Structure formats: structure tokens, C-alpha cells
Image: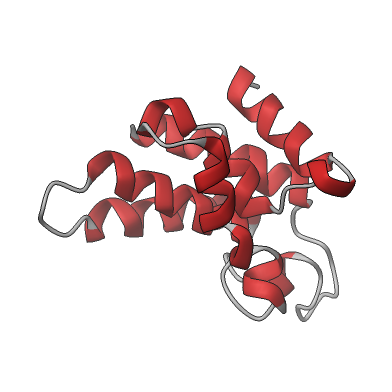
Length: 130
């Protein structure tokens, strides 16, 4: 596990004011890489926890990874191919890309991947892509 992966998981596991949602944990460990303050990335990611707040949508860790991918790779033209590839690889590692399916609301009623592992996997993929 890389140092960034470890830091992101620790941010996710924090409590109280130090608690980060999955998106924030992924995005904030790349603050120096993308030239934005961690506080700014934390604010940007605030609405993407728990699959955008209700577990019905895309995993927050994947949202954070895609945000960083855009900040690093966007040069005025779409980055659809990289974004699609990142999503595909995340799904392969975590079993799905929708929060509620990952967290056990699936036909097998089985948790496919823990939040900590989703965060770690997302950071690993961003490191691979950038």
C-alpha cells in the first residue's frame, strides 16, 4: 500500500471534525499534486459521500478519483476514455461502482468491498493514471 493510500484510509477513518467522506479522503491526498488546498478539495467533495448522500449513486471514492483525474489530465478536450477506464478498473477491484451495491444491497446481500478498500483502490488507480 502506498503512503497516499494509507493517508487516505486514515482520513476516512477519522472522527468528528477530522472525519472525511470517501470522496474527500481520496481527493485530499492529491492536494499538492493538483495545486489546490486540501480544504478546497474537502469542500468540493463534501456532497459525494455515501454515493452522493443516499447510497443510490456512484461511490464517493470513485467520484474523488475522477475529480483528480480531471484536474490532472484535462487539457481542453474530453478525457472520456481515461475516465471510462478508471471506472472500469475501479469496478473490477471493488465489484461495482454504485455505493449501495458495493455496500451489500445486491442480489447476494454481500458487502463487495469495504469503504476503506474502496478509498485505497481509488487512490491506487489515480496514482496509476497520473
